[in-house]
Image (cartoon, rainbow, N blue to C red; front, side, top):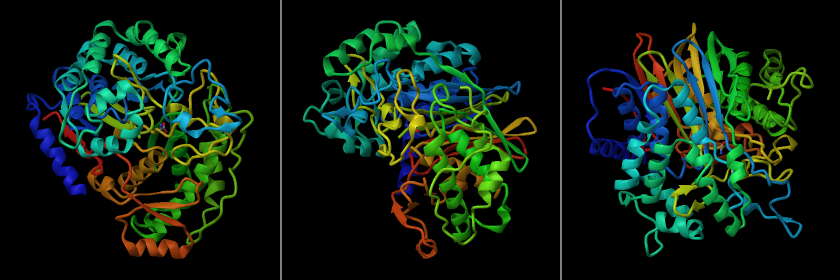
Length: 557
Ligand code: GLY
């Protein structure tokens, strides 16, 4: 299947306009060739990595709209050429009228309501984040970032295998909402197939308005009024006031060291930055040379570490504006304590979360896509964007083409009730008006001696965290190329459920050895979508797009 995906990506990439090739200016990796091309074109046109990332994001919102878009949110991690790291939090927030029991009907929790329909969306933050990034750090006019997206929405684009598969899986739910049905399904109600052309005229119109009028179109008028009117009729709670009060947050990057590298991650409400750092800190207590990737010893060590981190995630993590998330979670002493619980060759039960040092006093102040860009001057962007699960809430605001997220499902909608990703969460991640739901998005940048050597991140719910960890270990500890690192069969453990999930192309002997150790192994379809750019020892930019998605990683020439 991977081979087919790769061939498809080449075929699609070859159908676009040839890339201009005057100068090598940068590198981009995204899940969709149209978006990678938009990023590369932005840099060839004199833009920097920030212009490139926003052009990619807005193009993805059209050609990969089941994963991300202006109806969703993002975490944007920027490394500027002067050495500063900037974290722009464009995560959705719960509407002002949200309540803890908003999904309870007749005394019973209705789990479908946080996933599908008008009660599922949080207030989108992506446009606010992109607009801020361009204004502060970009070089090209805001308008330019929309050009490729408008073209793809107006003229249409051939949908890829992943898009077609997700469309087929969600067609019955999309059919419930007339504006969604009119765009994503054919007149006879069937989904578009791989290779068929999807046009999104309303979205093209909205993009033109956004390009001309700026983020105000989205947060002031007219989009909030149109959304409020629709929500009122459809039984939602989003209002124009929700949009008017939305603000991005600028956050302090979360920095830890790992064997001499500096790992720059995204702080809460991302749980990814915290737990990638925490797991690296635990692993620093072991010698990577003792275990080789692809062996039961390697998977055993990592799985035990994942269990400890995800047990902490379920208890401690939430929006730092509402709950105290201890910074001790990635303290080196705490990591040592946790490392002592990892017994080689054993499956050790993790009954509960740990207790990081000084947790009372030291805390953070408080389906998805990943893309990375780098320019020749030394600016880098690692960004994860999402509308949550495939096609988000399935709700398109009529007349706008804008598909709304279902990020409310990333809250713990009730104690002990797992979300779409089977993640359970605690009080720290309970719903409250204006609160950001906990996320697994883990945009990461690695520096050596103050210079970026790698940018990475992933898509795929909680597996984002473990995909990012594996990609870091394979490249930093084992010096694999990005392509080799991303091609290896993946595994994931998130504490609850107590299952080691492994991609089904994992060698059967390895699966048997892990079962013999005592793991409950679940073989699953290939998962995730990691994107990576790496600087080689001789200063060249190289990278890879996950072979599991029809993406493209490429330089400007
Ligand atoms: N919506 C997936 C995440 O943010 O983790």
